[in-house]
Each structure stands twice: as structure tokens, then as C-alpha cells.
Image 1: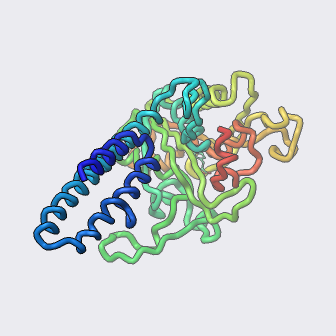
Image 2: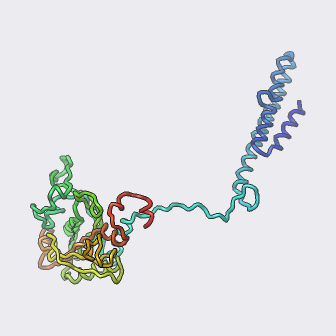
Image 3: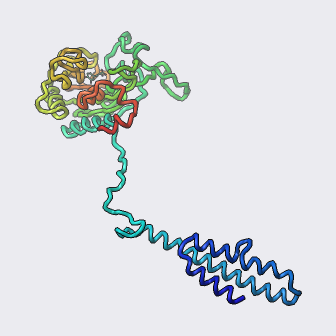
Length: 350
Ligand code: DAH
């Protein structure tokens, strides 16, 4: 009996792989194994002998089982160790000179990148960042900005009105809307702060618009506002020229063109030479050689009156930049929809 145990223990300790060890286990403890057979032969013995031999075989079985478990752990440890070794030339070696699998790093969305660039330019010029709600009231979005009740932009065709049933809200349902521009932030800032003011307000705006290559029902703007005792149109021009040069390069021609906005007087739009065709004329600039970049002007005294500013004392300028427009020109993209489709092949280029 002792011989069986000795042999088993020896064979177990010689087993170097899980397969070898399993073979030894079956040889001794399997259904037809040596120990199993010895146990089944017990029934042939007389009672007193049965007891002592039975005890002996069970002890041997326990010892063999324990030795197998121990060896199993040893083999496992050895396997892990081998796998983690990287000696060149050894079996299963890991070639550490091979380049690793590259990680896919996440990136900021191109619109976020452009938005950050615009913010940086103005922050470096001394502007602070202000924010306002995307669900606005008719008052801040239109009335306080001198947009009259019958103005076409108030139409249901252009504006998303919001119906919220909540008795606690002091605002009437029909007065809530998704802001159609970032200009209401001007009013909110001026209500809280006295001049001097120099802020930009970046954010999302919404219009009841069908989606096409140059329109979307949600897009981004950066509003700007500067108010002080002696702010002039020349200041506005200087700041926006710096912006265009920093954003698109020193030598890109830009121009101020007279325009109209109810909240500024006088008003202008800034165009820059089309970067796609270099001013020759193409589909992006509708063959004009120029593309419209932003709206701006001197703050209309009626807006100052709505926030209680002294119109004799203060002057100011304001501007509103369309971020998608800037991004399309800067990145050479002729279809705005690409920004919203989240196609990784497109996004990973930037
Ligand atoms: N709010 C205007 C729009 O969405 C853009 C704009 C024009 C903003 C002139 C201004 C401004 O602050 O002075 O079309």
C-alpha cells in the first residue's frame, strides 16, 4: 500500500503540465483508478480488516488528492510566470520590440475645438464668459432686444415655443421658447451688472428650420458685448479684425458691410474672403467670393433703456458669431450635417 502512495507522489511531483497531472489523477483516483479499485475491493474483506485497510486507503487517497492540488497550483504559477517572461528566443516569448496596439484616444468634437479657439481669442482680449438659459422667455429673446411683436422671427415658422404645464411657474406658457440666438444673454448680464462690461456668451441656439447643407434646427453662437463710457464703432472693428486674423490668418481679407438688426444701431455684418475659392467664386460663397461670418453693431439705446442704463452716459458694441459657419470655413467643410452625424471617420480627422 505504502508503495502505491510513494509512486503516486513521485509521479505527481514530476508532472509539469496540467495534462500530465490529469493523467496521474485518473491513474489513481479515476473511476477505474488504482485507489478506487482498492476501495471497491474492501467489500470482500472481513469486518475488522475492512476497518483498518479502509482507513489506510482513505488516508492515502487524501494524501494523493492533496499532492495533486498542490502541484496544480505550482503548474498554474509557473504558467503565469512563463507567460510574463519575455526573453527573446525562448518558447512562447513575447517580442518586446514589436510595436504595441495603438490606443484610440477620444477627441473633442470639431465644433467644440472651434468653440474653444473662439473663446480663447476673446478671453485673451479681456472678455469674460457669461451664460444664459436655453429655454428663454419671449421678453429676453425678443422684447428687451427691441424685436417688435410683429417681427417675422417671432413667427411659429421660425421659433420653437415651449409648452410647460406648471402652476408654480410665474411665466405664461406661451412666453417660453428655445432661444433663437445668444443675444438674450446680453440683457441678462446687463440687468445684473453695471458697466464696464466685456463678455462673450457661447452656447446652443434653436430655430424651426429644415436641415440642409447650411442649416440646422440647433446650432452654436458666440455672443459678444462691451459697454463702457466711451466705446466706439472703431473698437468693435478692431476687436473683430483681430478675431478674423487670429482665427483665419493674417492675410485673409475681411470687410464690414452695413446691415440691420433691431438691437444694434448702426448694424453691420462681417464678411471674409471665401477660403474655399480664394475669392474667385464657388458654391460655398454663392459665386460672390465673400462669406458672411457674423452680425454686429452698436448697442441700440432702446436695449440700454430696457435694462435701466443711462443712454447718455454709456455706449457699447455687440456681435454674434455663428460657430458652424466659422468651423466650415476653417476646416474646409461644405456640409453642416457632417457635424451632427457622429461619423467617426469624419470626426477623427480633426
Ligand atoms: N443675434 C443675431 C442672429 O442670431 C446675431 C447678432 C447680430 C448678434 C448683431 C449681435 C449683433 O449681438 O450685434 O442672427
